[in-house]
Each structure stands twice: as structure tokens, then as C-alpha cells.
Length: 374
Image (cartoon, rainbow, N blue to C red; front, top):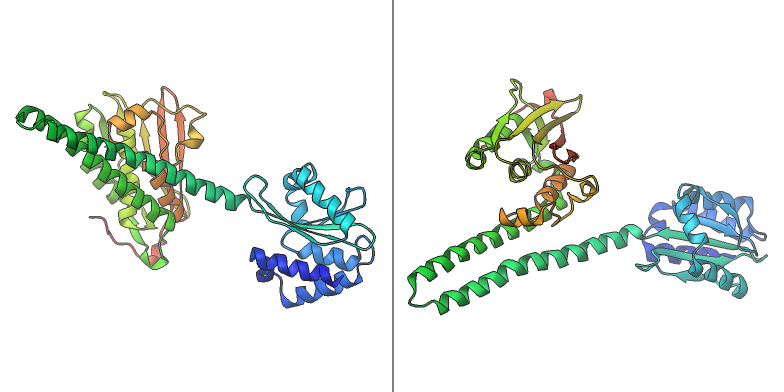
């Protein structure tokens, strides 16, 4: 039975999980428990597995579950998935037949690491770790790289074609001016995209605690609105801020919060028709402050709402591209909020409009306040 402990520790080393969680006392408990486990599951082994931070299942000769630990009880869907998985049942049968310990690494299609060991009476103990989060993260990384490559390729290809057109238009000043103007637009688009990719990376990385400072969101919002009045007026949209006499001081990073609010305001203007209003408001609870950005625009279909904070996702791809959008604005805003222990949520109804709510932790009064918004 000491082999069971050997394989348990080997699996933990591979995962980098169990050894970091089990105490020395817990390790000795495992040793004592596995040495005394002559039958399907002894009280000592049962008690020890109960504390193992992996899903632990015990199967009899017919491959029916006769015991499980706390982690397994907390993940019933995973347990059911394992029971119905052909690969898992195959490993159970092989372990019971060979009486040898088996370790099965996870993969993207079956994201479960499993270690199986046969007890002396033919029962099998299985330790399982769900690696789905790891593969989800890897999938998102690949998706981001693919999307970023595609998005970058579009303006780069346009720049190449325009440069060739300018060369071909030698001696025709009118055509050269036309192509040069288009060239400038594509350069600006490429610049915005690369800046937004950098901002998203920064937001996802988070900030050190000493980089955070008290930010008066009332002042910041008024500054953002002032900077966008011309843009709103050009498309006949009224851009207003609800009056508030008191500051709303949150803990944050000034530049990133200004970018987040700017993205929300520009999105509201972009997806609103002329003659409508975009309004910004404030609110607060005991420990959370929030700002709202409400438009009377086209709204967002319910099936699209879960996706709008994804990178490069566009509700109206044609309108977004025509207006120079990168598809990263909402992703940057939400990641910024969450990196500051806040969040960004949306309410929307097609044909009525949308309200985005940015929530952030308030600075306590005894922390002091200062206006850091330029």
C-alpha cells in the first residue's frame, strides 16, 4: 500500500497542487491510512481522502462508486461526467485488472488529470483534477492571438495597397491626395488598434496596490464629457451629466479609469441615432460607488449581451469599423474595473437603449481625498 502514497506524491508534484496544500501532518496521515487499507476503504483512508484537495472516488469491482470525498461532493457534474466517460471507465477496468497504479494526463478534449490505484480487494481509488480552466485560458490566448493577427492584418494590407496606388499615381496630384488621405486614416486605425491591445494587456495584468490612488469620479466624468461634446454635437446627440454636488471618490488608477469611461461614452455615441440623449449619472452604497452611461440607441439583443465584453466582439461590425472602432473598448473597460476589484455590467433592450454601470470600491473618508484628474 505504500505505493499508493508514492503515486499520490508523484501526482502532486506533477500538478504542483497537493504538496503545497497538504501539511506534514496530513502527509503522515496519508501514509498511515494507505498502509492500513486492506479492504475497499478503511476509516483512516476515508478520513484522509476527505481532506485531499482533489476529487477522490472509490469504485468497487463492478465500477460502482462506493465512496467519495468532499471535493467530489462539491463537483457533482464532474463526477457524473467521469462516470459516463469511456476513457475513464477504461482506465478503471485496466487498473482493477493489472493491479498497477495508472496516471492519465489531461488534454484539451478530456481536461481531467487522473491517478488510479487498485486496493487489495479489487476496489479502485481515483484522484482527479479538473484542468478545464487551464485549457480555457489557453484557448482564449490562442483566440486572442488569432483575432489580433486578423485585425492587424486588415490595416496593414490596406497600407500596402495604398502605398502601391500612390506610386502608380505618380504625376496625378489629385489621385495622390486622395490615396494619401486614405493612407492617413489606415495609419490612425492601426495606431488605435495597437494602443488598445496594449491597454487591454495592462488592464488584464492589474496594478500594484501602491499604484492606486483616490480618484474623484465626478470630476473625471465631467472632463470626459467635456472632451466629447464636439463629437456628440457633430452627430446631433445631447451629452449630459446628472448634477452631483458631492465628490464620488474611488480607489483606482487615473489614466486607466479615464480610458474606461471614454470607451463607454464613445460607444454610447457611436450606437445612438441623432436627436437622442446620452446621459451619465452617479450612485453609491456603503462601500461601492458607481457611474452609469445611458443611451437611447439601438440596444443589444439578449443573445448578444453575454458576448459584448469579449475581445474584438462587435454588435454591429459594419458600424464599428466605419467609426474606427477596434472591438476592444468594452473588454478594456471591464478588465479595468475587475482589476480594481470592481465590475462593469449592462442592461439593454433593443430599440430602447442601453445602460452600462461601472462599479468601483469607494475610498473611506479617513483615507482622505484629492483630485488627481487633469
